[in-house]
Length: 95
Image (cartoon, rainbow, N blue to C red; front, side, top):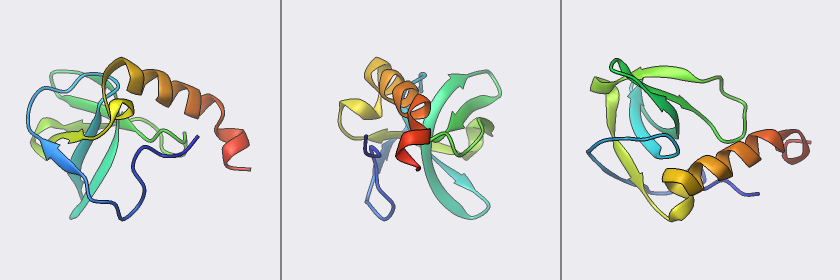
């Protein structure tokens, strides 16, 4: 299983509501990052990587630029399923 977005690739972001399974673009310590939305709350979105290396973390709404535009694996139910499978199989991928 490959990453949906690879390091160095250009990703476009569209402002608007996020839902679990979407890929979100956000600012963190002067960097622009892209990770999967695990869940949303009134305070912001909980984000993590698909590979399971990064623990879920809360990103305030003010730091989120929007939803990454991409193929079907970058959003919604398909994204949630892909992310779940990738996290469960990460020990094989990262070996």
